[in-house]
Every structure is written in structure tokens, then in C-alpha cells.
Amino acid sequence: MSSADATPPTGPTPQELKSALKAFRKRLKLTQLDDQSRIGRGPMSGGHASGIVGIMPPDQFPTSVWEELARQGKLKRAGSGMYSL
Image (cartoon, rainbow, N blue to C red; front, side, top):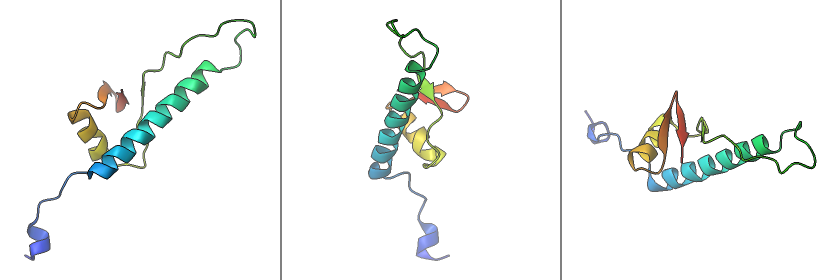
């Protein structure tokens, strides 16, 4: 066994976590804006607030990143692989 094999795998780096959280927030915001601007509402209505509070996290990052963010309390597990702020 070499010394490289003896080191335990490390978790996501702080930079990865920061980048993933930024991507999550952006995806959530865009999803909510898309929901609010659906066609079919009256042009003179006041619209409505989005009911979307949780989304599937972006798949550019591994599951371990999302689990770590949830463990740190920056995200909440919403069930079925979804997370919320």
C-alpha cells in the first residue's frame, strides 16, 4: 500500500461548497421566476408568488456536496432528493 492509498478520502473543499451553494441559489431563483411568469395569468392581475420552495440540486456537483451543505445547515432536505434553503 502506498502512502497515497493510506489517506482517507476528504470531503468537498470549501470552494466546492461555496460554488455549489451559489449554483443552487441561482437555479432556485430561476425556477421560481419561471413559475411566476407563466402564461395564462391575466395581464392586469397582480400575479402570484411562486409556490416552489425546493428543487433537485444541479447535477454538476456530486451528492456528497449536497449532503455536506445539509449537514452544515445551509440547505434543508425536502425529501425525494430535493433540497430547499
